[in-house]
Image (cartoon, rainbow, N blue to C red; front, side, top):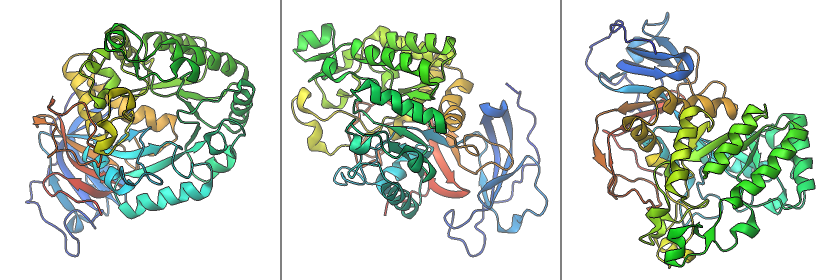
Length: 461
């Protein structure tokens, strides 16, 4: 890491709002004074000023030529961290189709309050995201919300039925950043092989969440001592590793780029590690809640711990942490799935799986840094640089002159407790209520515009 040099030309003028701008909303010219700038992609750890204009980062430390300082909004950020905006590669926003649970407007507001500037949305919407029309609808709704950027992940098969391939090339040409069948299986391995061959031809990233439906059938918890004692139907680790092993065999023949989503087991980490050692173009992600919770957290039969894949053993959790630290696992995701209250009030096996995870993604990962599990550099890399690289966000996930001004300002000493007063998501389904956190997002910029300020909260439309 680069050591902190003395502050470079910090302007201590009082904060002012340039004429003609509503404070922090219309303005796209900014000077962020004295923040600790952290960017693993450029090995950057310095305390300096950052200049934003026209949606881009235009200066670091030195005021750029022709910068209109008179029209700039000033933020004094001494003692705070400035990081590239987080890229969450798997988050369900419930629109279109399930607007009674949440909307793009409510969830993008929750996202930017947690420092997330880009969200990748899976294709299991209603209608299914297997056409350009649906992708354009989602993009338009995100633009109207005016918060985080929302990127679509197109369907691998038509209607996610696993029978006929979707128009993958057309979807990616229409703006989809990857292709996936979400949590729906492709039972026909010949069809899966054809899909990977097609994806390899057009260099399309395929996102797969491996879970065998016959092994996982009716399961709601990790197959182990806890599930047995509670009388819950279990999902064995083999439900993840069996389809993963099949997939790796097909990958070796096709050369397709595949991203394994939501890895949950120690055996799965070992398979990914071996596949990478063999030179396969495979990457993986893990949810933040799988890095903290285990099957023991299902003991109270709280519906907020019902997730898919299930929370597994402590040994699995620790292996996921080690895999992330070593780089075997590339990214951390929220696996955000907001639900209405009733969806979590039934008996445990009948509750809907998933939790609201946008606002706890960053603090949970940084909590691993506090505990010595991850270095700060690796933690930020897993949230910014690596997902940007894997999903093709070439000018995001970094702090550099010319890069897109998607940024988050973090107070590293803002001790706070997650409760109903701090959660902005429409979903209240989180097992982390009552947890103490240390790091908190204070401001977020998307495309050079401030879309969130904790001192000036912005409500959803």
